[in-house]
Amino acid sequence: MGFLKASLLALVAALLTAPVFSQSEEGTQTITDPSTGIVFQAWNPSPDVTFGLALPSDALTADATEFIGYLSCKKAWCGLSLGGGMVDSLLVLAYPSSSTSGSQEDDNKVLTSFRWASGYTLPTVYTGDARLTKISSRVNSTHFETIFRCVNCLKWVQKGDEGTAGAAPTSEGFLVLGWAHGVSGISGECADEARMGQHEEQGIFGAELDGEVVGRGLYEEWVGRFDTGEEVKGVCGGKPTSTLYTSTVKLPTSSSSLAAPGPTAGVCQKSYTVKAGDYCWLIATENGLTLDGFLGINAGLVCNPLQIGTVVCLKK
Ligand SMILES: *[C@@H]1O[C@H](CO)[C@@H](O)[C@H](O)[C@H]1NC(C)=O
Image 1 (cartoon, rainbow, N blue to C red):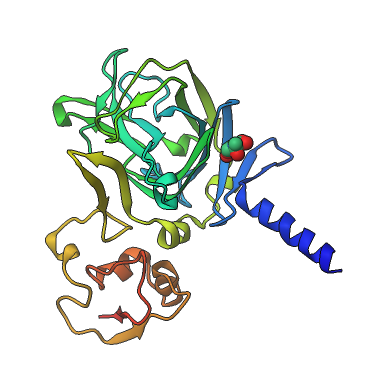
Image 2: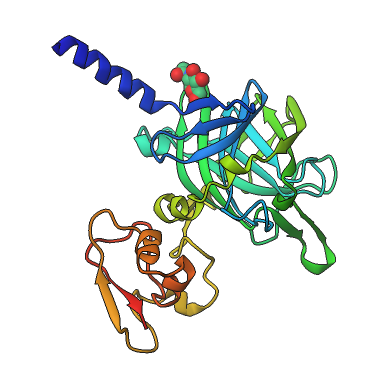
């Protein structure tokens, strides 16, 4: 009995460390991340690359501008094109930090950078306002994996009005995506300055969206609970560069959203003290508010992590 129980526990522990792949009858491949429960529709464009996608609940009727992505790659680096081809599309570069500080956190660091190529040359840094923040990442001796939230990523503008714009329209139910994989090295501990050689393999694939999987209505909850708000760019200019967004739900649009937590103008008519297990989306929904509405009356509130004991406003 004791042995059986121990074996079962070991099995459960082993299952918990790896993402769970499954395939539905319709042939849609899904991945469930064991530590967050986030479900992705997934594609394996190469044995070395797996890409997973989760979208806002209404993405198949209204074009989404953001997504939660899952990327698992064999070292040394991976690139993703959100428009299919390499040229004139928003590109995401991801690779593991070679930092050897030995701490668990550094060993699991996956650096990311938005890139742009106007020709078949080394892509430069994207100048638009996309933002990629970490949900989780893992690195082992052969592979790296990152789960991230990508805001303003499905619609892009390089170099403003004079530049090039494009979009990956989710309402069409079909996206054309591209990938690239490099096995030879990538240099640089600053993701925006990293240089890599030409990719060894690359391709374009059609991603037919399965509404049952990608828009299953939990997106907003996942974002509220698991987006750390941290952009992981590595060490740039000699110092660690990681931008922590205070509101993980939208970019700060005015200085007021960077102010100290607490009600702003107007008196709060109903307040609530955060308890263990609460998160912003849950508090908002349980009180008949949208997440935006809730954040609107709680300017500057930090959702990740949401501190127990914080007094939030439910009605103004
Ligand atoms: C590293 O992780 C990948 C996928 O996450 C897995 O396929 C591979 O076997 C792992 N390698 C080692 C050496 O553990």
